[in-house]
Amino acid sequence: MDISRKKLVAPYVNDMATFEGSDKKYSQLSEEEKIDKLNILYEEGFKAGKAQFFELHPDIKTKTTETEEQKEAKKEREAQNKELRQAQKETSNSEW
Image 1 (tube, rainbow, N blue to C red):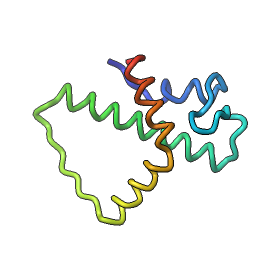
Image 2 (cartoon, rainbow, N blue to C red):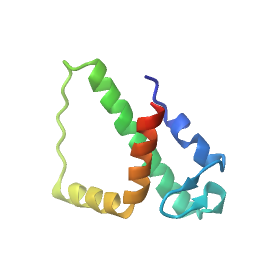
Image 3 (cartoon, rainbow, N blue to C red):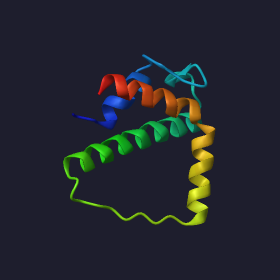
């Protein structure tokens, strides 16, 4: 199972796919929108890679501590980009 962020974002940055929730291609986005969308995709790639790592190495455990401010910011980001996240989960399940 090879999960790479480059593979995940390639269809978008090469204008071969539209972003769910906006129906725009990468070239049609503002710079701020590009940053936001790519951050989401990279975050999803990170989560998938992390899950893959812990599947391969179940003996390793991590400790995560977040401040309340970080938790609220994360909830807000996830709520704002719910459609894109759901589409990426569906896509990643069928491709990987």
